[in-house]
Amino acid sequence: MKTDPAHRLLDAPYPYRDAEPCLQLHGLSKRFGNQTVLQQIDLTVYNGEFISLLGPSGCGKTTLLRLIAGLDQPDQGRIELHGQDVTRLPPARRDYGIVFQSYALFPNLNVADNIAYGLRGNKEARRKRVTELLALIGLDAYATHYPAQLSGGQQQRVALARALATSPSLLLLDEPLSALDARVREHLRREIRQLQQQLGITTVMVTHDQEEALTMADRVVVMHRGGIEQSGTPHQIYRQPASPFVASFVGQGNFLPVQINDDGRVQLGEHHYAIPHTLAVGQAASLFIRPEDLRLHPEGELPDHTVWAERDKQELLGALYRITLRVPAWGQHTVQVDLGHEALSRLGQAQRVALSLPLERVHLFPQEATC
Ligand SMILES: Nc1ncnc2c1ncn2[C@@H]1O[C@H](COP(=O)(O)OP(=O)(O)OP(=O)(O)O)[C@@H](O)[C@H]1O
Image 1: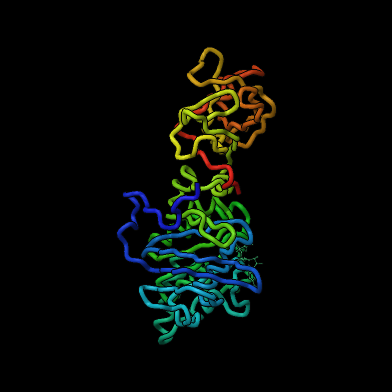
Image 2 (image 1 turned 60 degrees about the vertical axis):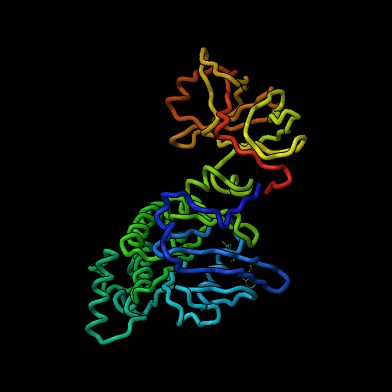
């Protein structure tokens, strides 16, 4: 069920719905030798929006960022920045700042000189701007330090200040946090997001880390094999995945084979469910449900559509337990269910438990559209 993803209208309360476009990509394609790396990419990024390009290794997200930056040339298509065609302009004539995964600071320049590197104007104006930027990134006390004297997180903040120094209208971030350890990464995520909102700077960030994309971005653009699979708010991407690829790449999920019966109901093993869908009668499909959406019921609580399930494995994930169960009535398929500690203790130790399927949480995908 690959829907409209790239151009789908965002929800009404979406804050950038009526904003002016900052960056527009029209039919961008790129090949390296025989390999098509990007195919007909269309994307509009609105003023002030934080977009994350999310996808597995090799899906083309860095290539797309490099095309926007002018570090590579597209074979086809057009790039507009504030309505101006910049497709053939060199990087220096495009109005953006960029931060790479490796800090890319000049080791022989101190922090202040690194930040001032791209600044024009007289010495006093540059000094003033550097002081402002040092305050912005909370490194006022480090102006005379050299990159080697800073932690990874501090170096990346300097790289960010350098990218912002000329007040560009677009900020490009290429996996800016992936070289940092988990705790620093989480902290810097919040800092970058706060700074981006404070400055209102339009931002495009490449990441393969779904948590990073979901927590930082206003809109996540999921890429797969050189194309855009879905574009939507983090909530839409997680809750209304447009394809099996998005459903499985972002978060966890159970896929169960089903059949569409003559009466339109969805057959899962021995059970029939009335789930709204647009699939054809007789069509094979996959039913998708997230582990936290399946319900396990303690003895004595048996709502409609309950099936019996046999407990198999139980793993502690930290805040949750992931329980693996075999469901004879669903064709012996196994499912995974996430439960909080409280819910697990209410469930007790019984080997056989009642399982129900909240129909409003189910997604159906035609089987040929598997990832
Ligand atoms: N300069 C190049 N020459 C040849 N092939 C390239 C070049 N740059 C990228 N590719 C190929 O293009 C494809 C997409 O690469 P790209 O770096 O855009 O992917 P990605 O989604 O950013 O992945 P990763 O997260 O691993 O960086 C890959 O198969 C890669 O090998």
